[in-house]
Each structure stands twice: as C-alpha cells, then as structure tokens.
Figure: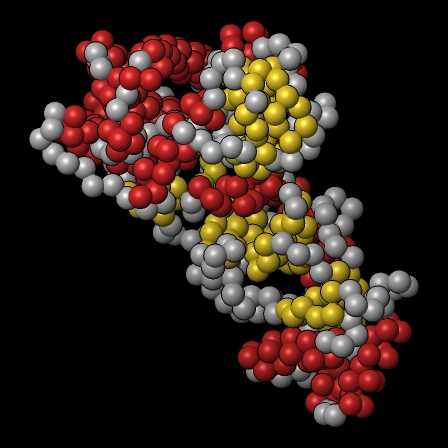
Length: 537
C-alpha cells in the first residue's frame, strides 16, 4: 500500500496530530460487496473485527470509513467528492457504510481493476476513529510555502484560508475564528509536511475539533491554486471603521500620489470589505519591481504623511462628539489601507539582497507613522469620552456605521440615514452592553479585578496584578500586560495568539472575540471573567 494515503498518513503521525486508523484491503472486498442479504454483512463484520488492532473497534463508538485514493475533481472549484467517506456506529452501520464508500468511488470513476492497474490500486478501505468538528475540509500545500484550504461552515457557506507570498487571506472574518489560527500555524509547516511525505505538493483532509486540528488523510497532488478569489480585507478587523467608510476616491488618489499604477477596488458586502486576490497580487508584483527605487519609496512615504496630515486637520476641526467619531473612523480607514501596503513593501525589501538599510529604514518609518496615528486616535478618543454622557444616543447609533459624507449630511439635518438593524444593534452593544457578555474561552479559569485598557506599550507597563488587561489586539509589544494582570480580554486573536498562549502557560483566564472591548469597558470598571463570560461588578 505504499502509494495509498495510509502510507503517507503513517509518515505524518510522528510529527502531526493524526487519529488512530487501520487499513482493510484485499480482493475479497469486491466479492463481499457484490453479495446481498445478511451473510455478506456478517462475513464482512467478522473480517473487519479480526483485522482491526486490539481495542480499536468498540460497540457503540463512532467511526469513519474512507476511500484510500482521492477522487478525480477540480480542487480549485470544490472539495466535494475528492474523498469518499461515511460515518457509522459500530457494529450496526459498518457494512452498509463501507459498501457505500466502496461503490461510490469505484463506480463513479468506472475503474477497471485488472493487470498492472489493479496491482497499483488494490481494493482497500481505511477506518478511523471519528472526531466531531469541521468536516469535509481539505488543504493544498505547495513546496514553495503557499497554502490553500477550503471547508464548509456550520451554516453551509464555503470558507477558505489562503497563504500566498507570505501573506494570509480569509474568505470572511468568521473563517478566521473557525479555524484561522490553526490553519495559519499549519501553513507555516507546509515545507515540513511536504518533506515528510516526500512530495513537493500535498493534498490533505483535516478536521478541526475543540481548538485542535487533526490530519485524517494525505497524498501527493498535482492541482493548482484558484486563480480568482474574493478575500476579506484583513485590516478591517484591526481598525474600527465601517466598510462604507473606505472612500474609493481616497484610495485612487493615494495610489496616484504614491506612484503606483495598480489599483485596489474595494467591494462592500453585508459581511465586510473585500478585494480581488488578483488585484492584490498585481500590486505586489509592482511593489517588487519598484522597491529598489529610492524615488518610489520617498513618494510613498510622502503620500502616507499627507494622508495622516489631512486626518489630523480633521481632528483639529472636530468640535462636536459626533464629528470626533467621524474623524476617528476616517483616520482608521486610511491607516488600514496604508498599513496594508506598507507591510507588503517591507516584506519585499526583507526578501531582497543588499536592501537591509532600506528595510530597516522603512520599518522605522512604519512605526513612526503608527505612533502619529496612535496620538491622533488617542486625542479623538479623549474628546469622545469627555462628552460621552451628553451624546444623542439615537444619532450616535446611526453614525456608528454609515459613510463619512452621509454622516455629515445627517448631522446637518439635510439627509436621513436608513440603516440595517444589525448596525444599530452593534452600536447598542458597545454603548449599552447586556451582561454577562459571552466570548470565546481561549484560556480556562476565573478572575476578577479592575479593568486596564491596553492600547500601547506604555499602557502595558502600567498594568498591575489586581487588574484585568483589556486590549483590541494584544501583539508581542503588549503581552507584558498579560504577565502582570490577573486575566485578559481581547477582540481579535484565537487559540494560538500571543495572549492566549501566554495565558494558558501562566494558568490565567483569557477571553477573546469581544468586539470593541476597549470601548465597551473603561479604566476603573470592575469585572469578573469565568467560563468565557464577563460579568460587571
């Protein structure tokens, strides 16, 4: 069975999580499944029980039977049908499920097993312990480090994760919560997985269950990555702004001032802001070609500084809380776009030889730009919080998720904004949250303390032992707060985020997926966190 998936799966078992399995093979399978009545079923059950390892098959337990060879299909369109499998409870469903897998695979492909072809692909089935979780998921590893994964969500929508040229992309924001951190971690081991199997390109089927990812099938694969995909704009989750706040005119002017010919056409959907993958890849090609040009890097820096300068002027003019909020969202959308391009230029410079000085200079510029952004955002935040109790709630609810221009018209009374109910609910959740607030328990435990909002390293340094660290995203510059605090609350980041890993190691509770946590809570609030729930004291 050297050329079957069971052989490759055996090689992976020492390095990757793989459920227990065994293979049943032989020409007798064809004869048994061709029969009918009770005798074939009883005979099959006897052979299955005798062939299985000791204590593998237990009455009442759930198992899955799989074909050992991937079915022919277009990987780029769908994973449906690539692997034939059936779930059953032992012993009642073993025969019918096995026969269904056997017939669906061999009959669909009209296999003629004779001579050399029969020797290459013997009749065989693989039986595994069944793990409940995200099923029907597969991933394609490329020896170059590129990675593409696709799976059906609980609601039936198709979701994907892509790692291309060192950057990660998702089909939507929910995909990153379902399996994002696990797939990102697995994608970084693409080269190791390829070397373990012995082939450059590898196709696997996997299951995600309770924060763990198990490889259930693996084999060499000669397919290609999808050429056209719509991906979620990654920085939308890291900056607080509405998809409608991304001004197409600003994007066009920014690219022109930066000296870029490529374009990014943002598309607004009900679940977020999206880009065409081929447009991103074309932009990356242009950046790679121009990254050695000192004049290009200079013009790009000027475009960024001019954009921040324009946003800062809006801060100065903002004399009402509503206008402060609008200026903040305008600033956030601009910074999200600039950081999206900045990271890709830095990545290009990092890969180029003899570009160390430019690379370091560019990262220094990036951090300097972020410092100016943080200063502007903090100034706006203070203005908003200082007059928070005096805000018109209904007006603020509407402003929270409408475009910049429409919001100004709404404030001046020249236009009424019609908003979807979910946007008003989001504003309601931020301003008047209903406790207990439910999140994702990234590290178990319970703790209570005083809230400390963490937005920068200076905040992290101030965190004390009796406090709960609350941060939109706790990166490596802020994790010192997790060390000092009793517990952690975050908006972004999953089971393998810096905060979650550190919290588990230190046996402290950590709760994630609390949207706008730094706006729901304020410094000085007293909270208790327990079992993924946040209680206000």
